[in-house]
Image (cartoon, rainbow, N blue to C red; front, side, top):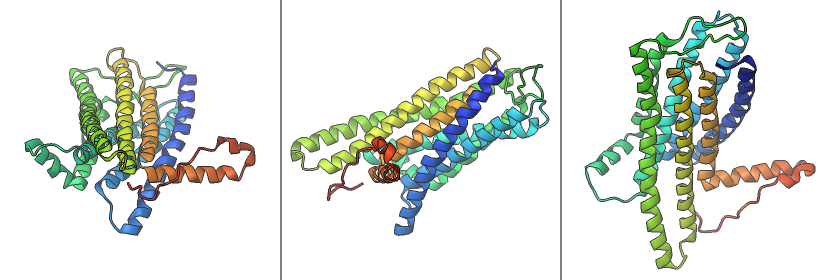
Length: 321
């Protein structure tokens, strides 16, 4: 069980992560909104990223609010409010992971050329209804987490440690539900992402290698842009796999050791939203270059820290996203 000093340290760390998460995701939303004002339309990729950004920002705000309430409510007088916040946090956590898996699935379908089959037709049907799929992910995220309310302990504290918002399974149904939640929130999205990333890595890398060999490097810019997508996709998958390992270990302490490690669970989720948002910014060259340029302009105002500048890569005339 975490001590009060451990909780305070995690609370401060989560606050810093929340700032970074909100910054990166707000940047993504502003860039996408500016693009929409120019073209008056959003492609599916931008729509999915927008959904992830909104869910990530909301998740971080609610996480910090829940931790703040837990810090000040030492006698569990706001236990029900904390329980509602926990349900929303776990719901948004599920939404973020499934939306990210859907983004990788989208890249896999769009970038990998496969023979026409039943599986390919299913993929095309899903991508024709991106908005409906994302709405389904959001609704499912909240519906699947409602049973958590019956698992939140009313009071579980000692004279020195207060754990008002606990999720400790005590009945067979609750153990089954926790196992089900781990399956749908961690394992299945991980399988979807890994499968899609392997397809992208193998098929697209092979295609680009052949294209580069046959054109003698003439398609360099296009090669660079698509390889950037590969790097972003693989980065998101690696980040998610690492998160799954950490999340399942902390959930195991809840189920097997009956220890309240909710602070660690939400901390790992906060780290994931921060790092994945940074990876998505990097994944689109125009977004990343603009962010680096803005960062360097900011440092120009303070010569004493100008050594922290990041080198910029100039855009070639035929470069395109």
